[in-house]
Each structure stands twice: as structure tokens, then as C-alpha cells.
Image (cartoon, rainbow, N blue to C red):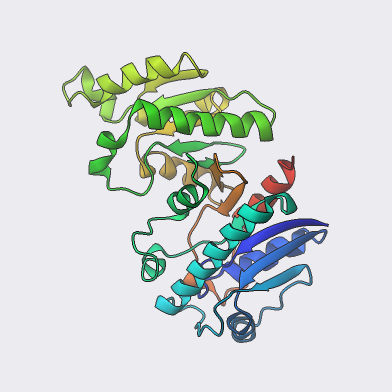
Length: 307
């Protein structure tokens, strides 16, 4: 039976409802959820969820968390972190046993109570794996990568350099080549409006152009191109991945086009990690109409990319 390891994410959020929907869609897959038995049982009882039989619980080392569905706090954040920490440990020691790691969404501020400096899954996983990773938002219609992840927009231009951009492009290229059997076409977006109007808005894009020229020796890369006209239907068909300067530059068009079907993929790790492309939906824990499309697509991607 194919196995997928799952970290519980924000334990007060809608993660278990999302996971249940994905498990029902994939009865031949064994989902191994790293969480606390008491917190899980209490959550299911209060939200009237019955976990499918192909979800199996791996008890966290710390036990008996008190989690209130729909009310995230430091306790639910602590369980989210314990689950993530132990899930990564399992993947590093038993990665050959699983198709990959499915991380359910977290609330960063809640996790930061017990993990100082936590800014997101991507950065944490990269550090634990001692790898250079890229955050790929993938869908059949559009795929994007921010060259900087969870940082203030004002810091983004200073953090973009040839070394880090090359590492991210290499991680994404390898994912496409090894997992999707495809040599991808890349486009890189300018940082400022109109590519800085020949320096009128500063020299950020002049530096980016020089960096792109070097990267074109290694990758099938176009640009820099203006971000405001990048995501035309023609370009969506022409390019496999758009690389943007900062998070929202590429995440906004991605979520507009693929919010229910997009998958967050961490490329470059020693194992494959996927996640839905949205937050924990703590306000929808009691809703039976919750759209689990992104979680279901994440599982599909793991099955599709099995080595």
C-alpha cells in the first residue's frame, strides 16, 4: 500500500476535514498522520468528523494537547510544531517508505510561540534538510516561484542574487526533469514597474538583467519581462514556471487562477514535500462545504511523481 506521511498543521484549523476528503478520494493510499490521539479524538467528536479507515495516527512524543476547534492558540500551535518536527525526522530516516510529506496548513504566529524565528514551512524544511530549496506553486494552468519567500517587500531586492536564484532554478528544474519528465521553460519577472523604465526607478532591474543573462547559459530562461503583462494566456502556454521577485508578485496571479487546484511544492529537499496552497481555514472547521481541492491535488501530485 502506498504511504503518505502527514503533519497535522494548525490543529484547531480545518486540516483534518481536508485530509479526510483526500483520504476518501484515495482509498488505496495509507495516510499516516503525526498528531496527538487525545487532541484528534476530541476534535473529531466536536466537529462530527469520522476519519476514514486509511488514516492512521502516529502519536507525537508529547501528549494530551488541549485544542479547541476553530480557536487557534499557542497550544494548537505547539502541536502543529511537534507534528512538523517529528514528521521531518521520520522523513529523513525513512524517506524511502513514503511517497512524500503532506503538510497541512499552519498559522506561523502560533508556531512561533514554540519555534522562535519560524517564518514558514519552506524555510524550516530547508534548514532541517540542509538543502537549498525553492517554493514552487504548481498547477496545470500556472506555476510560479518567488525568489524571496516570507520577507517584507522592502527587503526583497537586496536578497536576490545570482547564487540564490541559480539554486532555486536548479531545484525546480530537477523537479520537472526527474518527477515530471519535462525540461521546463522559465520566465523571470522584473522587480519594478515597467522594468524600472531604463533606470528611472532605480537599478534593481539593471542588476536583474545581468543576473538573468548568466542564468540563460544554464536554463531555458526568458526575461526579465514586465510583471504587469507577464500572465497573458499566450505566456501561460509558453512558459512552465514564472520566477518573481517577491511572494505576492507571483502568488496573487497564481491563486486567482488556481486557488482550488494549486499545490505548494518544496523542490530541492531529499524528499518531496507538498501542501495545499491556502491557510488553515480555522473559521470553517464546522463547514461541510469546505473545498478540499488543493489538498486532493497535492495527493495527486505525490502519486503522479512517484519514483
